[in-house]
Length: 278
Image 1: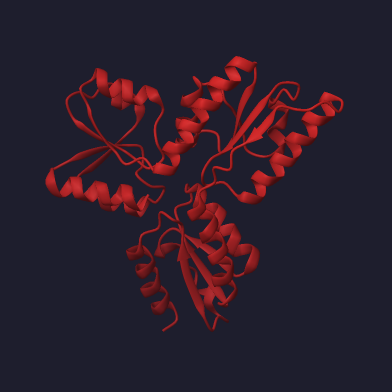
Image 2: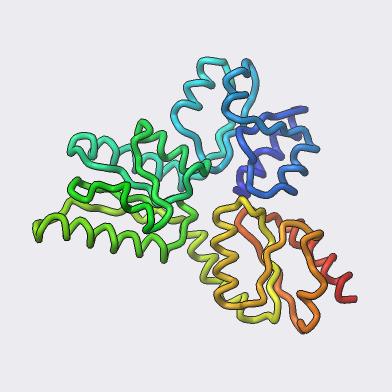
C-alpha cells in the first residue's frame, strides 16, 4: 500500500492528473491528500466510459475483466498491485483449473465485497465461495474437493480455525475415507509480523491510539490485536476522533497504525494529543 502511494505521488509530479480505480488506501485523509494533488478516484462503471487516459491499479489487485476493459478503451494502466496479491491471484487461478477438472470448489476466507477479494474471485470466473467465518461454512459441499485460500490481510487465528473445521466436516462426510483438501497459507507475512510487534507495543503503554481508516481490513484486525493486549486501546481515523477522557489517567500513550497509515498522520495525531494533555 505504501508502494502504491509512492507510485501515485511520482505520477502526479509528472502529470497534472491521474485516475485511480477505487480508494488507493482505506484511509480517507490520505485519499483526500492525493486528491488535492490531482488524483481522481473512479469506480468500475466509470472505467467503462473512460478512453485514452491513465489509470492506477491500487495494491489490492484487479480481476481479469479490468485489464480487458483497459485494452478495449486504450487505457494505460499503472499497475501498483501488491506482489503478494499477484502471487495469490496466480495460485487461485491454478487451483480453480484443478478444481474444474475434479468438480471441486475454490474457497476464499475473506470479506465479501472487499477489493482484493473481488480480484481473487475474478481468477475463478466468479465461481469461488467466499466465507467470512464459521457461520458461512454451509456454503461448502463437504463431499467435494476443496482448495482453501485466504485474503492476505485476514487473521491467522481465524484461518487456522477454518482449516480445522473444514477438514473435520469433510472427514465426517467421507466416512473415514481420505479427503481431497488443501489449504494455501496466503496471509501476508508483513501483517503477521506487525501483529506480533503490536502485541509487545500495546503492552508497554497505559493508552494506545490506533490510527486507521475504519474501512481498512488489516487495520481492524491489527486494532483488535492491540485491544486484546490493552483494554485502553482506541481507534481514531483523524484528530477529531480523540476524546480527552481517554487520557485522564494515562501516564504514557503509544501511537500506532495500520499498514496503510502514513507517518504524517500519526505525527499529526501526536501533536493533537500533546495539546489535550498540555
